[in-house]
Length: 245
Length: 245
DNA sequence: CGCGAGCTTGATGCCGATCAATGCATGTGG
DNA sequence: CCACATGCATTGATCGGCATCAAGCTCGCG
Image 1 (cartoon, rainbow over the protein chains, first blue to last red):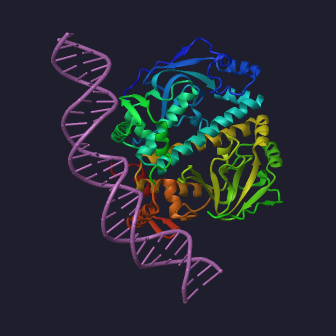
Image 2: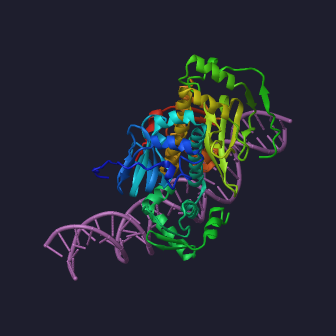
């Protein structure tokens, strides 16, 4: 929370979308080779964001979207009175900054939870290119729409689930996304604190901690601080689906 | 919840965007006259949706966005185990259906809370046209981005506010939007039940009702069933801003 | 007029917040 | 290498806000 040095390192390397191992998860999905080449000319630079630093803050001028290349982020909004809500966690291949399009200013903070790198996608150039390529246009629309759908899912969680259900849903979502990226769905290291999980799920950190312990007692998980092993994914799933209602 | 007759009435009249009194709130915002004419050729038909009927349901094929011309809608998502969450209320000039873009299927139900009319906007034609007109493209992106930002605000509400704060925020949002449309911000008729408000705010209907009563006792509102008069908007605002924390 | 959907209000109980203490890992300086 | 500080996690005890259960009430409508 104190003033951060905020070193903005722009990497000189070009990292072509066309040769990126995330292209099937990210903006390039569905593009032809020549479209990809054009996208490459647009996404020229990476930026490193050390753990704990912000990629952008609420109020910052909006210019670009950012694709997570490596690392892990959280986004959080805050109200005038210091209330504060984590609205999402982003991992490789996911886009950051969509919130800024509407007002030309960012409306949330994006904070790296581990040393990370993002690709910078100048938005107005992206708009130009997506007027040329309907495939790119469609992919951008898809990504924005899916963000809306995801948000609706979080509303459902926050509005109608109880603590255990929320945490189970959270863990299943996380393991699912890790699996998509080729990681083990059963063994994971949380990049965020109990407090950040709690903020995202509308719970206090003590409740998150207690619920982890309960899952461990019930044989669903093995919990060692941030090291989690999922022992019974099906059990978590039945929790999410209105266990005992 | 029983089977509905679902009469799909397509109105023969053309209602040009260019002459619509909502054009400053809706998709046409910021378009030039010749752009508006082209949009008119695309948005050819209206559809009437009687109170209680659905405009679309979760799982329906996605083809079009819908702009509310008159009336009032709710959207709600539901999980496999009949849990159910109202994700928004839409009034004149607001768009419905953005959720369907990502998967080509709608992911929520849109239900008319009073007799309503919507303009049908065939989405793929809209995409075509927005590749021609960057103004239209920008407006579409703005609308989607603002929906994301709105959703983040709801998350903040659901994740960190208490019942009184939630209801106060809800009422202020509603009156703000009515004011934008030229209605009195102090006198309003709720189109939705206590249960629907509760679902949106993550509360039970009894809590909503009690909180209305409390606001009335405190001199903030006058409540007669669904007829609400706001007596002290500033008082509601201070409630939202962490009253006594 | 009587029925039913929706709203209000009261009594009670439970889930998760709050307050508080302890534990555990990491890092820093003597 | 130890002593100590710091940040995060765990666990217990207690409290309170909202859910739940249960009556009545209001109003519109057949």
